[in-house]
Length: 545
Image 1: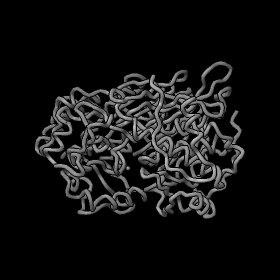
Image 2 (image 1 turned 90 degrees about the vertical axis):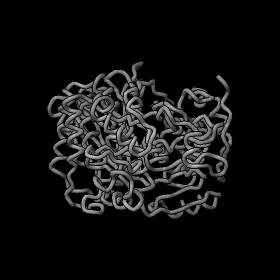
Image 3 (image 1 turned 60 degrees about the vertical axis):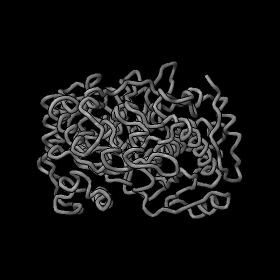
Image 4 (image 1 turned 30 degrees about the vertical axis):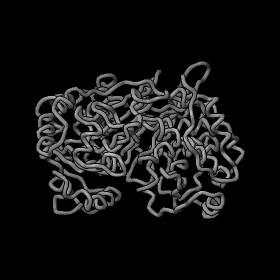
């Protein structure tokens, strides 16, 4: 039975939601789209796909039909992992970029936006794989809410409008962007009605012809033709040959529970490494928001990133395995590097040889879905295929141009990926039971959000909405630390005194992610249902019945 402290010590406009069927997303209309499928008799996977389709319409600043996805699905007895991140066009390699863009500091130049940042979109193949394995309603039914919203239009939400306006100056001149996302020559304002007829047409084709139509046939030909027109490498064959992969989740035990993540090419392993290191300390003996606890968590995260940035890539290219990186003896040695009194600049270790939306869905039959999809960096590449509503991600900039790197760009390869769903289970009377479906969107903040919220719930007993609302910190790639302005000034000053380079950020939405959490209240009494939280850093909603 769950034993949380149900008080919330942090300022928040939201309360935890209790229900037997819940959809928690970063946009209310997407949550309602998922609930419609549950009301129709569908399961949590049906609801997740419907919500995912809807959110490409109502939160296009974060994801689209040309994005990527990952999922963890608890089918009532077992956890399944899905990697629907796209691969690079077959023609890509370091020389391709060097010839086209030249060199800088001895490495080929890698564009951040435009066609040469676009890998094969994986999100629709992800919906296809989820539906084929677990779906119970016809695929066309799952597209109905999104089609309706795209055709009739919707009033733009507050944080979506803010992020939309911030992206326009950089992306307004990219192919197809202004035609779709600047219908009045600018970004829409809060509450302004926007319609996406091209998006609706693509969704209707997927509803009628099935999701494979995105990779073969008319839609694929439109994408490939627009790529040729833009001088890009992506071909119809690149699209036709792509499929999502079912993978075995990786995991780490922590405080009597097991935390699960998708294996590389994603960065979920960073959260597991950090938790494995923290497990060597008595975190519960420290005060939750005080310096000693926050310092330990930050140092564990820095150690994790030092290894992740060195080793994680497409698993076919990695020189060490996830098992080696998560080896308990290795993490014990890494934990010894933490000085509880001061900040340390860590290097990677040597394991022994051997801009995104996140949603969580659970139904009363026990199925739970942890799902994430993204265009990366807001709208992604800035490229939008005309008359289709397909805005394409820019995951190609996740590759390295260093030929010595395991993550070096090659044809047909998955890049290092930031988006990561997560899941929590527990062994009860010899049987594995689902506990929580959760995730935090937001680039490199994601494993850090996993770590901070898990510690708050498991070490300190904070209920999910409180753990979600608590002030966050973020370790940057140069190991400086950003802190939310709501973090205690005393704690921030103390961190700085210990040697951390601190910045206080007033804009939490852009820097500290946004989470959704669904926790099963009692594995012995399914009638109690779940408790859900939705992050106040976005326009989100946890809704249930």
